[in-house]
Length: 269
Image (cartoon, rainbow, N blue to C red; front, side, top):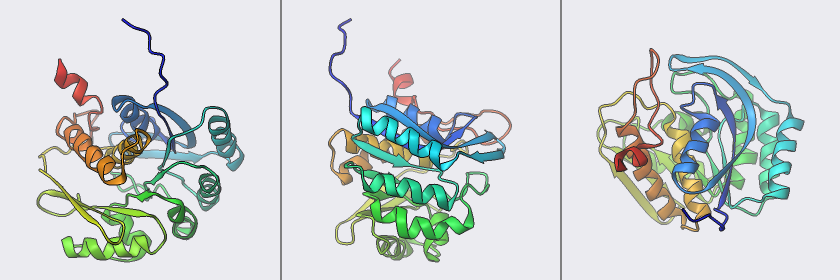
């Protein structure tokens, strides 16, 4: 077995911890490993969480978040950054400031609520997301609930996804990926920079074990960008990876189980 000498691309996730291992930092690092990059983390919050929901959440102090970020970026460096749960306006603004000074593509997953409907972002932080975080994003990846939270646009069909993308792009990200997984029919997403449109479709699998899909998709996009792919290629590859992970999702505990981040490895055996 030859010893690896090349350093893989490095991707940093700035997000909360999911003690159940299906979403958050844990999902991000599993995704990054599966896609061939070196994952690193800045913890913003600790949650007590399982397949049934979020039983508690404790955000970290701003100084702790800033110190983790500087520690990693100043010494190790990054080829891409992904953000997830940022919990409060103070953390959103701190992280946005750090990202603005980092020369790497940024994937922003504007996490508002968990799969179980638990709030993961203070209501007063929404304006900070709009005015500080989205403007530094290379790609923003809101689902339809997050679109409604951030823009007021209610999406019920594919035409509505175009309106949602326009509203998100108005806040300043270079690309918007509007995730239409909550619409009936095939799982359809719209990626656009305001001119080019990419519609991504995948079959909808009858599997309720989908905890962690948003975190996983955003981390997969960041991994693709770190590997040198353009945005459309990175998103297309991430969509394929997540679709396979959803198909292989498994029961865990008494509620909603996670997607299977290691599905490609298991498929190969």
